[in-house]
Image 1 (cartoon, chains in turn blue, green):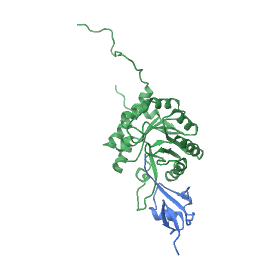
Image 2: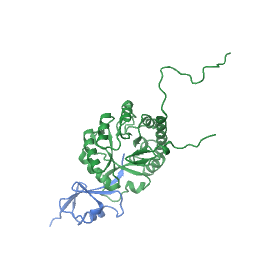
Image 3: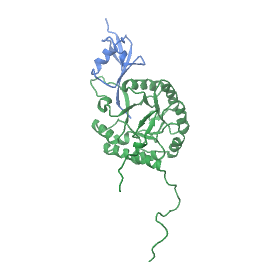
Image 4: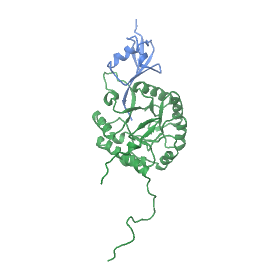
Length: 69
Length: 265
């Protein structure tokens, strides 16, 4: 069976985790600060990451505060 | 008897949306030769408010966030740099609120990538919508007194007209318009973009700006830390000069020394 796909920051990725919290944990250090997530074009507050399950076709943006002008 | 120097800012705070700043210099954090230079420049500038951007995490492992390196030493003003529509800017502002735990946003919507020139139509839409969502909106905008008033009417807590194009270092292209914006704006005016050196920052303050936001002039200077210090004093000097009130310009000389009791040979 083919694995289901999601898009993370514009790139296709296999849906290998259950929740948004797990996805973030797979990409960033656990204590990472200054991080925000949008799911399908809407911001998902940090408190909802653990309970929000990912589904095939979801578009996830994971962003971080960086230097800026 | 001599008096001890006290910064003019201590009894003359800038207040935006109820938040008081003793430093009238806002500093960008991008484009420094290295991270230590950025941290040292932030310290030397005396700023209490620095800008940040929101960008996708890189997929190749750990990277430090601005919040990790600057910690709680300064406040963060997330921007919406790179956005070209109100819709994108609103999502970016919401991501910034989540990432940096602040309702403040430097609203930047560019209508021409090459010129980095603000799109006032989109700014008005986004300012009204973000204000309704509880944001403190500081739009980067044109030095147009009507556009600035409309943005204030739409809810902007301050307006941030450009002196000249972003990163150009051309200074204040149209000082008369900046002065008009300052004299008519119902909200504080923050000169944003175009500053090249310290005299530009002082000039902005003399024209009546409430604060100056700059980045490239410091980050790309040969010595960013020294330039950061120069900007700090320039903003203070310009503010003092504005409050003090300059003398009128004259066409001819007006001798400073008394004209009576001249010595004759």
